[in-house]
Image 1 (cartoon, one colour):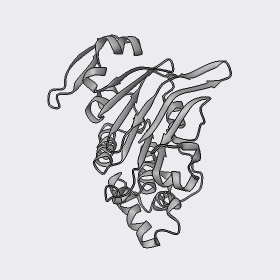
Image 2 (cartoon, helix red, strand yellow):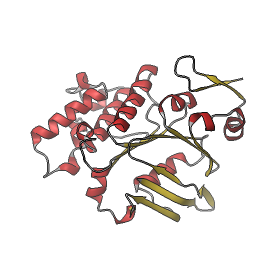
Image 3 (cartoon, one colour):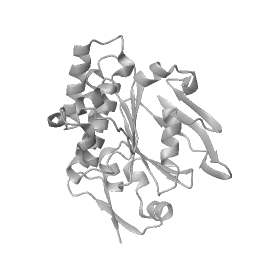
Length: 262
Protein backbone atom coordinates (compact mmCIF):
# COMPACT_ATOMS: atom_id res chain seq x y z
CA UNK A 1 0.00 0.00 0.00
CA UNK A 2 1.08 3.58 -0.69
CA UNK A 3 0.05 5.72 2.23
CA UNK A 4 0.33 9.37 3.32
CA UNK A 5 -0.66 10.36 6.87
CA UNK A 6 -1.38 13.86 8.24
CA UNK A 7 0.49 15.65 5.46
CA UNK A 8 1.46 19.28 5.92
CA UNK A 9 3.12 21.36 3.19
CA UNK A 10 3.76 25.10 3.34
CA UNK A 11 5.26 27.55 0.89
CA UNK A 12 6.33 30.46 3.03
CA UNK A 13 3.29 31.59 5.01
CA UNK A 14 0.90 29.71 2.71
CA UNK A 15 -0.17 26.30 4.04
CA UNK A 16 -0.99 24.30 0.91
CA UNK A 17 -1.78 20.96 2.59
CA UNK A 18 -3.31 20.93 6.05
CA UNK A 19 -3.31 17.37 7.32
CA UNK A 20 -4.93 15.18 4.65
CA UNK A 21 -4.33 11.43 4.83
CA UNK A 22 -4.67 9.15 1.84
CA UNK A 23 -3.95 5.52 0.94
CA UNK A 24 -3.84 3.72 -2.41
CA UNK A 25 -4.06 -0.06 -2.36
CA UNK A 26 -2.93 -2.44 -5.10
CA UNK A 27 -5.75 -3.11 -7.53
CA UNK A 28 -7.80 0.07 -6.98
CA UNK A 29 -8.32 3.34 -8.82
CA UNK A 30 -8.50 6.40 -6.59
CA UNK A 31 -9.57 9.74 -8.08
CA UNK A 32 -8.49 12.94 -6.33
CA UNK A 33 -10.85 15.84 -6.97
CA UNK A 34 -10.99 19.45 -5.87
CA UNK A 35 -11.03 23.03 -7.10
CA UNK A 36 -7.95 24.81 -8.41
CA UNK A 37 -5.48 25.45 -5.61
CA UNK A 38 -6.89 22.72 -3.37
CA UNK A 39 -3.49 20.99 -3.10
CA UNK A 40 -4.09 18.04 -5.42
CA UNK A 41 -0.82 18.19 -7.39
CA UNK A 42 1.12 18.93 -4.21
CA UNK A 43 -0.33 15.82 -2.59
CA UNK A 44 0.60 13.75 -5.63
CA UNK A 45 4.17 15.09 -5.48
CA UNK A 46 4.34 14.05 -1.81
CA UNK A 47 3.07 10.57 -2.66
CA UNK A 48 5.57 10.34 -5.53
CA UNK A 49 8.47 11.22 -3.25
CA UNK A 50 9.48 14.30 -5.26
CA UNK A 51 8.35 16.65 -2.47
CA UNK A 52 9.10 16.03 1.18
CA UNK A 53 6.31 17.25 3.47
CA UNK A 54 6.96 19.52 6.40
CA UNK A 55 4.69 17.36 8.53
CA UNK A 56 3.42 13.81 8.29
CA UNK A 57 4.68 10.54 6.88
CA UNK A 58 4.59 8.78 3.52
CA UNK A 59 5.23 5.05 3.26
CA UNK A 60 5.30 2.46 0.50
CA UNK A 61 4.55 -1.09 1.66
CA UNK A 62 5.15 0.02 5.25
CA UNK A 63 8.60 1.48 4.54
CA UNK A 64 9.18 5.22 4.67
CA UNK A 65 9.31 6.60 1.14
CA UNK A 66 12.53 8.49 1.90
CA UNK A 67 14.21 5.19 2.82
CA UNK A 68 13.70 3.67 -0.63
CA UNK A 69 16.67 3.69 -3.00
CA UNK A 70 15.81 5.76 -6.11
CA UNK A 71 16.05 2.81 -8.51
CA UNK A 72 13.98 0.52 -6.29
CA UNK A 73 11.33 3.23 -5.98
CA UNK A 74 11.30 3.80 -9.74
CA UNK A 75 10.59 0.11 -10.26
CA UNK A 76 7.56 0.29 -7.96
CA UNK A 77 5.91 3.60 -8.80
CA UNK A 78 5.68 5.75 -11.91
CA UNK A 79 4.45 9.33 -12.20
CA UNK A 80 2.72 10.96 -15.16
CA UNK A 81 3.03 14.74 -14.69
CA UNK A 82 0.69 17.32 -16.19
CA UNK A 83 3.38 18.43 -18.63
CA UNK A 84 6.46 16.57 -19.86
CA UNK A 85 9.08 18.71 -21.59
CA UNK A 86 11.41 17.02 -24.07
CA UNK A 87 13.31 19.17 -26.54
CA UNK A 88 15.36 16.44 -28.20
CA UNK A 89 14.19 14.85 -31.42
CA UNK A 90 13.69 11.37 -29.99
CA UNK A 91 11.31 9.03 -31.74
CA UNK A 92 8.15 8.01 -29.92
CA UNK A 93 9.55 4.52 -29.38
CA UNK A 94 12.74 5.98 -27.89
CA UNK A 95 10.69 8.11 -25.48
CA UNK A 96 8.78 5.06 -24.27
CA UNK A 97 12.03 3.13 -23.90
CA UNK A 98 13.22 5.84 -21.49
CA UNK A 99 10.72 4.34 -19.08
CA UNK A 100 12.74 1.15 -19.09
CA UNK A 101 15.84 2.85 -17.62
CA UNK A 102 15.25 1.47 -14.08
CA UNK A 103 15.27 -2.05 -15.56
CA UNK A 104 18.80 -1.72 -16.93
CA UNK A 105 20.76 -4.87 -16.21
CA UNK A 106 17.67 -6.95 -15.46
CA UNK A 107 15.98 -6.99 -18.87
CA UNK A 108 17.34 -7.62 -22.34
CA UNK A 109 16.95 -5.19 -25.23
CA UNK A 110 14.40 -7.53 -26.80
CA UNK A 111 12.41 -7.61 -23.56
CA UNK A 112 12.49 -3.82 -23.29
CA UNK A 113 11.28 -3.50 -26.87
CA UNK A 114 8.46 -5.98 -26.28
CA UNK A 115 7.29 -4.07 -23.20
CA UNK A 116 7.51 -0.72 -25.01
CA UNK A 117 5.53 -2.00 -27.97
CA UNK A 118 2.83 -3.44 -25.70
CA UNK A 119 2.56 -0.13 -23.84
CA UNK A 120 2.40 1.85 -27.08
CA UNK A 121 -0.52 -0.34 -28.11
CA UNK A 122 -2.21 0.08 -24.71
CA UNK A 123 -1.96 3.88 -24.99
CA UNK A 124 -3.21 3.71 -28.60
CA UNK A 125 -0.09 5.32 -30.07
CA UNK A 126 1.56 2.31 -31.72
CA UNK A 127 1.18 3.85 -35.23
CA UNK A 128 3.26 6.82 -34.01
CA UNK A 129 6.27 4.73 -32.91
CA UNK A 130 8.57 6.07 -35.64
CA UNK A 131 7.45 9.70 -35.41
CA UNK A 132 9.64 12.43 -33.92
CA UNK A 133 8.23 13.25 -30.50
CA UNK A 134 8.42 17.08 -30.86
CA UNK A 135 6.18 16.93 -33.96
CA UNK A 136 3.25 15.43 -32.03
CA UNK A 137 0.18 17.26 -30.79
CA UNK A 138 -0.27 17.87 -27.08
CA UNK A 139 -2.73 15.03 -26.75
CA UNK A 140 -0.49 12.62 -28.66
CA UNK A 141 2.45 13.54 -26.44
CA UNK A 142 0.39 12.87 -23.33
CA UNK A 143 -0.56 9.42 -24.59
CA UNK A 144 3.10 8.67 -25.40
CA UNK A 145 4.07 9.72 -21.88
CA UNK A 146 1.37 7.39 -20.55
CA UNK A 147 2.98 4.56 -22.51
CA UNK A 148 6.35 5.54 -21.00
CA UNK A 149 5.16 5.30 -17.38
CA UNK A 150 3.35 2.04 -18.12
CA UNK A 151 6.64 0.66 -19.46
CA UNK A 152 8.43 1.87 -16.33
CA UNK A 153 6.28 -0.24 -14.00
CA UNK A 154 6.29 -3.20 -16.40
CA UNK A 155 2.57 -2.98 -17.16
CA UNK A 156 2.46 -6.10 -19.39
CA UNK A 157 3.97 -8.26 -16.63
CA UNK A 158 1.92 -6.82 -13.74
CA UNK A 159 -0.36 -9.25 -11.96
CA UNK A 160 2.05 -12.16 -12.40
CA UNK A 161 3.09 -12.50 -8.78
CA UNK A 162 5.25 -9.40 -8.74
CA UNK A 163 5.32 -6.94 -5.87
CA UNK A 164 2.81 -4.11 -5.84
CA UNK A 165 3.21 -1.28 -8.29
CA UNK A 166 1.66 2.19 -8.30
CA UNK A 167 0.75 4.60 -11.05
CA UNK A 168 0.31 8.29 -10.17
CA UNK A 169 -1.43 10.35 -12.85
CA UNK A 170 -1.62 14.15 -12.62
CA UNK A 171 -4.58 15.29 -14.73
CA UNK A 172 -4.03 12.56 -17.35
CA UNK A 173 -7.11 13.54 -19.39
CA UNK A 174 -6.53 17.31 -19.48
CA UNK A 175 -5.21 17.57 -23.06
CA UNK A 176 -7.15 14.66 -24.55
CA UNK A 177 -10.21 14.51 -26.75
CA UNK A 178 -13.33 12.84 -25.42
CA UNK A 179 -12.57 9.39 -26.83
CA UNK A 180 -9.04 9.33 -25.47
CA UNK A 181 -10.14 10.61 -22.06
CA UNK A 182 -12.19 7.44 -21.71
CA UNK A 183 -9.45 5.30 -23.29
CA UNK A 184 -6.92 6.56 -20.74
CA UNK A 185 -9.20 5.79 -17.82
CA UNK A 186 -9.99 2.36 -19.25
CA UNK A 187 -6.23 1.81 -19.19
CA UNK A 188 -6.27 2.84 -15.52
CA UNK A 189 -8.95 0.24 -14.87
CA UNK A 190 -6.97 -2.44 -16.72
CA UNK A 191 -3.91 -1.53 -14.67
CA UNK A 192 -5.95 -1.97 -11.50
CA UNK A 193 -7.18 -5.34 -12.77
CA UNK A 194 -3.50 -6.37 -12.97
CA UNK A 195 -2.95 -5.41 -9.33
CA UNK A 196 -1.51 -1.94 -9.90
CA UNK A 197 -2.67 0.80 -7.53
CA UNK A 198 -3.71 3.87 -9.51
CA UNK A 199 -4.19 7.43 -8.26
CA UNK A 200 -5.45 9.99 -10.76
CA UNK A 201 -6.09 13.68 -10.30
CA UNK A 202 -9.22 14.53 -12.27
CA UNK A 203 -11.36 17.61 -12.79
CA UNK A 204 -14.30 15.88 -14.42
CA UNK A 205 -16.56 14.58 -11.65
CA UNK A 206 -18.49 12.37 -14.04
CA UNK A 207 -15.35 10.65 -15.35
CA UNK A 208 -14.30 10.03 -11.76
CA UNK A 209 -17.70 8.53 -10.95
CA UNK A 210 -17.49 6.22 -13.96
CA UNK A 211 -13.98 4.84 -13.47
CA UNK A 212 -12.78 5.24 -9.87
CA UNK A 213 -13.34 2.82 -7.02
CA UNK A 214 -12.94 5.61 -4.50
CA UNK A 215 -13.07 9.40 -4.64
CA UNK A 216 -11.06 11.81 -2.49
CA UNK A 217 -12.06 15.48 -2.43
CA UNK A 218 -9.61 18.16 -1.31
CA UNK A 219 -10.70 21.67 -0.46
CA UNK A 220 -8.43 24.34 0.96
CA UNK A 221 -5.67 21.81 1.49
CA UNK A 222 -7.87 19.61 3.66
CA UNK A 223 -9.71 16.36 3.13
CA UNK A 224 -13.33 17.35 2.44
CA UNK A 225 -14.71 13.88 1.61
CA UNK A 226 -13.62 10.33 0.83
CA UNK A 227 -15.58 7.27 -0.26
CA UNK A 228 -17.56 5.82 -3.11
CA UNK A 229 -18.96 8.04 -5.84
CA UNK A 230 -22.42 7.57 -4.35
CA UNK A 231 -21.25 8.74 -0.94
CA UNK A 232 -19.12 11.64 -2.12
CA UNK A 233 -20.90 13.19 -5.10
CA UNK A 234 -23.82 14.79 -3.33
CA UNK A 235 -25.30 18.14 -4.24
CA UNK A 236 -24.34 19.61 -0.87
CA UNK A 237 -20.73 18.42 -1.06
CA UNK A 238 -20.18 19.66 -4.61
CA UNK A 239 -21.64 23.04 -3.70
CA UNK A 240 -19.44 23.29 -0.60
CA UNK A 241 -16.21 22.14 -2.28
CA UNK A 242 -16.58 23.67 -5.75
CA UNK A 243 -18.95 26.58 -5.08
CA UNK A 244 -21.21 25.28 -7.83
CA UNK A 245 -24.87 24.28 -7.51
CA UNK A 246 -25.50 20.96 -9.24
CA UNK A 247 -28.17 18.35 -9.73
CA UNK A 248 -27.09 14.74 -9.15
CA UNK A 249 -28.90 11.99 -11.04
CA UNK A 250 -28.03 8.44 -12.09
CA UNK A 251 -26.11 7.67 -15.26
CA UNK A 252 -28.62 6.08 -17.66
CA UNK A 253 -26.50 3.00 -18.45
CA UNK A 254 -23.75 2.78 -15.80
CA UNK A 255 -25.86 3.53 -12.75
CA UNK A 256 -23.21 5.77 -11.17
CA UNK A 257 -23.90 9.36 -10.10
CA UNK A 258 -24.05 11.96 -12.85
CA UNK A 259 -23.43 15.58 -11.95
CA UNK A 260 -25.07 18.40 -13.93
CA UNK A 261 -24.61 22.11 -13.15
CA UNK A 262 -27.86 23.99 -12.60
